[in-house]
Length: 229
Image (cartoon, rainbow, N blue to C red; front, side, top):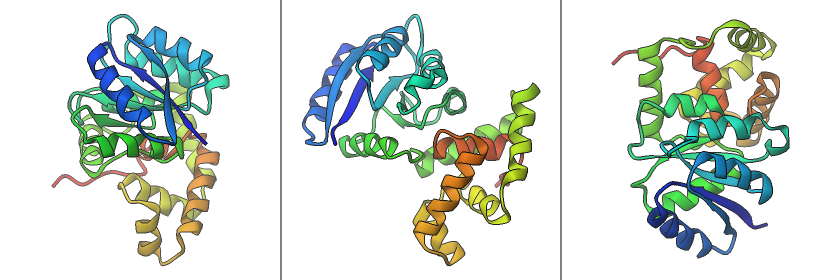
């Protein structure tokens, strides 16, 4: 199946480079280009994109606002968003994940990384590299768990943790630590398929779109409190 990719970036030259790269792969194609967030939302709907490469900083409707609009639309629930940043760890990373992005990638990434990111996001996995995860943890440390999550939303996320089994909570903690299914399986001495089942059940119980949202929930609920090195 061909992965339908939408490019959202205000730099035409960068979009052109990404388009050539993506279209060179037999399993993916660029179905649209947007210069701002509003265009990205419209094209995500009209072109039925599978994955959106979304620049955070764009004029008018920025990438964060566009991501929120896409993830809030039930008809676009299958769309996965990879945020593009000038630096892999910046002030908008946590906001991007809270907005519903599947992960983020530095614009200086190698071509293979970009293509891999599209495939990972399309598969419903979290695009959180070790460096990015470290930065994410550092940001949560600075803000404190759930620093800007209040009201019913914040309470709801915490309460839903009670629905998890002990094993699902254990797996959630390891997911939040940046471990892959294979790494978790080795740590817990179970099969990767068993880990995948626990992850999927945790996602369903917590109302998470994908693995990245599990990481957000783990920190915002206070389930995971990283140590200061």
